Amino acid sequence: MGLTRKMLKAMGIEEEKIDQIVEAHTETVEALKQQCEEFKQKAADFDGVQKELDKLKAADQSGKEWKEKFEKLQADVESRDRQAAVTKAYKKLLQDSGVDERAIDIIVKGTDLSSFKLDKEGEIADAETVKGKIKADYGAFITQSNTVKDVPPTPPAQQKTKMSREDIMAIKDTSERQKAIAENSELFGF
Image 1 (cartoon, rainbow, N blue to C red):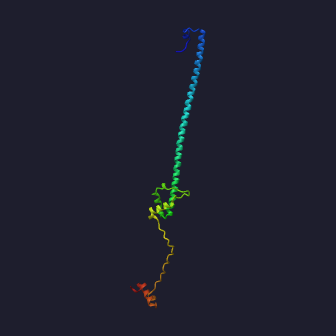
Image 2 (cartoon, rainbow, N blue to C red):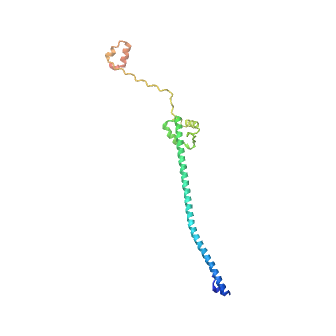
C-alpha cells in the first residue's frame, strides 16, 4: 500500500504538510528508482564481466593443457635422445668387446637399456663391468681374433710341362727316369 493524499488527510494532517510529505516521499522514491537503475546496469555489466572471466578461465585451462602437452612432448624427445645415445654407446661397447657385427643389433634389441647410465663423454658408465657381463652372457658371439701374422700364400706349384714318352726314356739318371714314368703313367699304359 502506497502513501496517498487521501490517507494523509484521514490521519488529520494539514494540507500544507501533506504537500511537503508527498514531495519528500517522491524525492525518496525517485532516488530509489535511480539507485535501482544503477544496480540493474551494474548487474548487466556483471554478466558481461562474468562471461569475460569465464572466457579467461577457459583460456587459462587451455593454456595449462597446451603447457602439459608441450612438457610431455619435450619429455618424449629427451627420452628418445637418451635412448639413442645409450644404444649408440652400447653398440660401441659390444664392438670393443669383440662381438660379431651380425649379432650386435640382435643383442641390442634384447637388452634393457634403461638401466645403463652415460658418463660425461657419452660412454657407458662402468664400462669394464658391462664388458665383463657382455663376455659372460654373449661369449658365443665374440669372435676370436687370431694373433698369427698374415703369411703370404704359397705360390702355386709350377706345372711341369707334359713330357713325351721319348723325353722320359731319354733321361739318363735311373731314379729320375722312374719318377717321371710314375708321374706320367698314362703314357706307359698303367
